[in-house]
Image 1 (cartoon, rainbow, N blue to C red):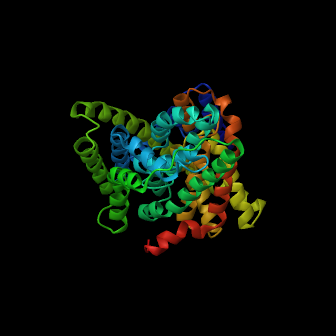
Image 2: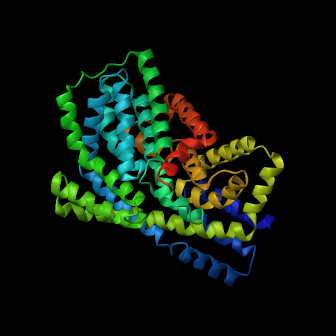
Image 3: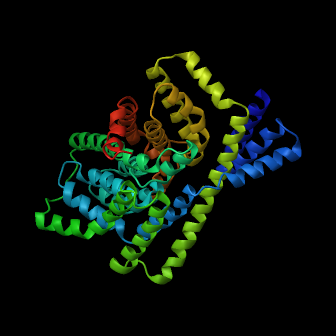
Length: 431
């Protein structure tokens, strides 16, 4: 057993260091570790079988639909309308443009379901404005990168669907509803830091917008925000499943972007579809190889041994949850969110349940943890996307990121040790 685990870890880390795509790192590491467990032919057959069966899930059909809906919304002028609404609401406050960035990312991320798309769309519009207002390129990029991750906690969210799959069937509806308050908490924590920084540096503010203009911008953005109401409302009311909701989201996005806003022409849909297919292929390959790796770990009883090791350190739930948080934060620095959820949910969830942690609460806790990893070097995908949009090197935003990291960590601790924050809304809706 020890040899198989060593082979798996060494192979994965070496391939990752060689800049091999993560899905291939996971797949090859799984295959080589299987060679140490069983003979050559059974090893190849088992990995191939697990890769295929890993995608055999009706729930996973929601992912390509949400990806397509997010790409349509991303090209359909949604970002500009959300930014205009946010500027009307908070632009006149001290540090107003930073607040606008955070709020717009929360709204756009929730609508698109993609932190990278949010960082690119909102950052592309907000970064030049923030720099012109004296915020500084590094600070502007740091605010955009950290706030872009909040949309992964606020539903609809693909990663919550993936957690439902990895956990063995935790209710997607409960996870979606549970994500609202923690996501808002993350955004509020970032806005508090932004307000303190703005007060100390004396950043310029926008002029106050008349109420009539606020109402006009709200009406203009309302159809975009309606997607969240339609999708989540339909799921909570039991009108349709998460997969059916994803298909409805595509139809809604098409009608909105092509028919109402008229920001996308019909001939441009081919590019949107092609981009969605490529993104779906990458995500599905990650899921398939991660499911194979998860099976190999279970075959070697790694989850049980990790659980026993954690319990042997301490039986105090507070200490164990802190240890799990530290491990997930470390995992998030070098692994993308999708494989991390698929691989580590079967390892940590049984320990959490043994400590009395609700599976829905633990799912939100995991996602918040891994969101921080997305804006942390060396493998933070949102970090690099945000830096690319802003034209700033990673080294240029490390210092501005530090207080924002602290804000996210404090939000994580509140989510971890105040379970009512996560479980109250699902309880209200009887989920």
